[in-house]
Length: 387
Image (cartoon, rainbow, N blue to C red; front, side, top):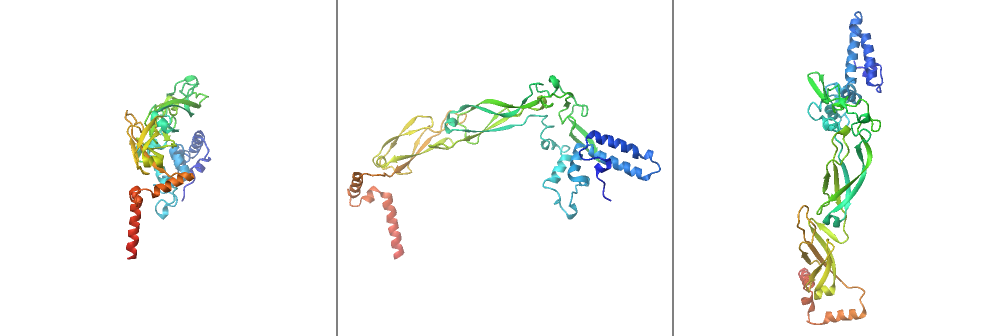
């Protein structure tokens, strides 16, 4: 025979308060107590049913488990659909959630799932703030101001949660321990006190401004210093600048996550900087010098030797990024790109044709050794195919 719904046993709805449950149980327990009904054998069964229902519904964790899974929550771990084998009848994570709700704290793991209220004694939540900075700011460091909504200690009660700043008093349910014990068969279950939510203290007269939490929402402005040498993805921890804790408990921390914005000229490679610089063909052929910008805002002179090719790289020592918590700097690497001239005048075209035909009978071998070598290999390749 299937069990009756516990709420039906007490004649209540699921929305009934703890006081309503207690009154209904007492009234029905007196009515069906075996001592009052010696001639009615069914009274003992009814009384037993009442005790079983009330024992579950008066306990917050048991009630939550029953509301979620019904009688299956207390039938040896068997849930809906268990007859088919396995746990397919549970929603994802249902069985593990139920097990942790009922036995997590006994096994030492209940604090995390309950939001840290018991284990952390109301410590404020940690906050995250995403900030994008320029490559120049990452090189030299930066002082910045950030503003955002957070929880701060209530000004009306000074963070105590009590009206007029009254201090909390010791919880009578757990006597200040923050946890209570209950017997379930052979097990003694220790769980967070439902009266004080693990704080060990309660507010008799809650502050109207904060509802007894000891904190209110407000905009908070902070001045932060970004050190020189930070990299993309670095995290800065501001201790105690997170949300305020419950009723004067320790505040959380603020974590500043940094992102480096792309630069128009430079590409960062750790502590080094890469810079792609186009140079005129004449400078590449004849040699010369160019001035290139550096991350510190100065210009550096780079000597270009005659015959420089696209892809040639030049190294400027100690012209790269700052290194975090170090006086040293990385290097800067200049990669040149030889620019082919465009929009030539008639005279420029004539001069280039003269250059092409002047000098050695085979100028390509001496003036353009790479292209000459490549096409020589191509010629040999085709000859091999035709033989």
